[in-house]
Amino acid sequence: MLVDITPVSKIDWESKGARAYSVPFTSDGYWARSRMPLYVASSGKPGRTIVAIGGTHGDEYEGPVALKNLINGFDADRLVSGRLIVVPVFSVTAFYADQREAAADGINMNRAFPGKADGSISYRMARFLTDEVLSRSDVVIDIHSGGRGFQIVPTMSFHSVDDPELKRQFKETAFLFGTPFTMIYTSSMGTGLLTEEAEKMGKITIGSELGYGASTDLDGVRWAQHGVLNVMRHYGLLDEPVEDLRLPDKWGPAQRLVQNIDIDTWVTAPIAGISEPLAPLGAYVTAGTPVARIHDFYRWDEPGIDIVADQDGFVLCRKFRAKTEQGDVVMVIAREVD
Image (cartoon, rainbow, N blue to C red; front, side):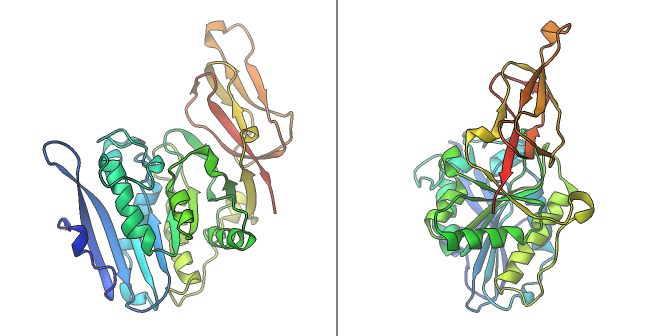
């Protein structure tokens, strides 16, 4: 069933039960409207509000598929407290165009926060999310994957913070997903991030990288869908035990906390060419170990150039496409931390 367009003023955030909305945003001079999907399920009782968002980038499909599955299989009567808010596809025009940035205005939605009420469509969508959704949340889950750019080990993530108690809550929440790695990173790698805005508002905020290649990864969808349910269990929305979502046969039993907060973790290409990985995803490597090779096929009779790891750590991600420009990040090495 196609959900009718719903003005923001008509959204019911509080009443017991589940509701689906299509929130309209005018996208061009012909008054065309893009519809942001929004789902609200409330217990009608006090408690935490969990927000889950997919499709912040349009070529990352694990989040939208997982959240669509979650919504359509969820009985709101299971809620014993609090509220669940889901935006399965955030950057709508990017999603339908099968591209990272919004087709309507070329904006990377994960650089658009806190948004602008009088800006282009992406900035207005970001402003809506900031004012109407993030403001109501206690916990924010922003589900990403590698898209076309990177092949990434299944990883949850959160920002580096000085407050040890907040760090504990971030880590505890991220580990509920059961992924083999959880990455601490810094917001200085970009500005205008959704997660950064949620943190400024004092929310428990986590992200993820749960697939790659603009495909739909089976395990990534599983981790995203059931990870959100685990967060709901942990914070008391569901009176159910937390599930163990680890996949030890594939990744081993350990859940590792790793850090990626400076460019020393990035392995970059010294020349343009074709990249060849020399270390598998998830492998532990030591500083000085060759981890990638760049081949210049204009000089096909010469060996490729090896690139070495600058530090000990785990291979967290690699460039997905072989064609590489000078300066491209071809691999990220993240070191384990406590």
